[in-house]
Amino acid sequence: MAEKITLSVIKADVGGYVGHSSIHQNLLDVAKERLSKAKDSGMIVDFHVTRVGDDLELIMTHERGVDNEEIHQLAWNTFVAATEEAKRLKLYGAGQDLLSDAFSGNIKGMGPGVAEMEFVERKSEPVIVFMADKTSPGAWNLPLFKMFADPFNTAGLVIDPTMHEGFNFDVVDVYGHKAITLSCPEEMYDLLMFIGAMRRFMIRRVYRKDGEICAAASTQKLSLIAGRYIGKDDPVLIVRCQSGMPAVGEALEPFAFPHIVEGWMRGSHHGPLMPVPFYEANPSRFDGPPRVIAAGFQITNGHLIGPRDLFDDPSFDRARQLANEIGDYLRTHGPFEPHRLGLDDLEYTTMPQLMKKLEDRFRPE
Ligand code: 13P
Ligand code: 13P
Ligand code: MG
Ligand code: MG
Image (cartoon, rainbow, N blue to C red; front, side):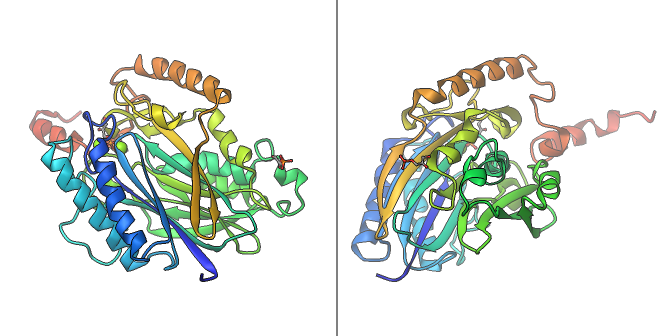
């Protein structure tokens, strides 16, 4: 087996059941069948198919590196096949995230969300794949900062000499089409200035100072690709754990605080990000509140041993309860900000149409 292994997490909403609340078993079955064949043929080493809310998640290991055309094509074809089944069942928004008719070499920019990393498997390789629904990629900024830069969250930053040096954060400006790498703890305040504005600046990757990759997040924004609102870019995140990286519990700890993210109802409202076990990842109330699941794996000779359902733990009950309370509070605002997103975010919804319709009725003031 080659020295390096690639972990690719590629996701798309190809049809909701019922509405946007969950996924139909047939779509999971279609995806499993496709990836099974790819595994048998040796194209991928291993895979796990799952879902959060209405998002179909393909977790794959292989030896082809990141941005590999065949792997992206495999994911694309899998989503197309699942879409066919979604159309047959007339599931809601069938093919929602597939913005193109034909695959064009790299699945990024075509609708699906992608998080990938390549590394040499360590003596033991625990990883967590976080997957969220009814939110958007900026949702990972706060938890990633806490995991890799906040000593009140991650004891290892203080206690573990191999973490003491801190981490580098690769931040992308999704509107400016630029990226910057900032080093923590030295440039922590600079970093926070950017990533606190999570609509625009997103942590894409985190590296140890020796260059070892620790985390990779999807940063695809559907509205920016499509130029209009067509559903939210529900994101994924991979975090490697232990031995010079955050312990599993340190990577989970930020989610004990259900922070406010965008993406609830019609992608147009703020709500708390609720950490849930797999079986509770069905956002129903007002199509939410936003959910996150955590699938833990040991990667062993490229194989995915797992998943363990890491939020299936009563120690996250309080976070869920708080999320419900915050949900009640925000819902009481109805169509008012800050429950509803600000105007900039509504640009891609029906706001421009409404403006156009009422254009003539605006008087100078
Ligand atoms: P163990 O002693 O169970 O290996 O735990 C070590 C640790 O770092 C837990 O956070
Ligand atoms: P999804 O982005 O999960 O499809 O949700 C869209 C929506 O409008 C929910 O109200
Ligand atoms: Mg949907
Ligand atoms: Mg979704």
